Length: 116
Image (cartoon, rainbow, N blue to C red):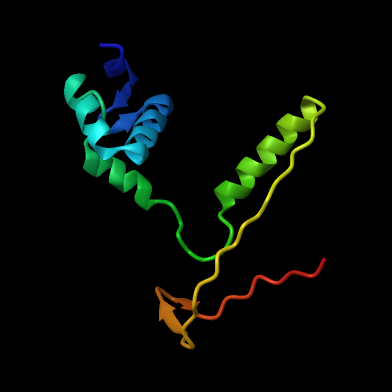
């Protein structure tokens, strides 16, 4: 009954429950289905979790969320008088010599070179 209290309105879930559902589903879909069944559907349906994952912007480049997390970690470390060491890993992929228009946005060659 404790989990049912986390449902705010129809279709709206508390941030803690939403975070738990996303994390569990990420690690194991089978475990998610088992927990959902064991707790009598207190967790949202798998289709709802899939919709939550669809709102992540998958366009090339650095995501705003990733940079915000790094910023929060740096602020938290400086408050504790500690230093953060970070490593950026970039994977290569082949790029087609083509540009196209996607929903009014020109997609194609990407260059994230910045002047330091």
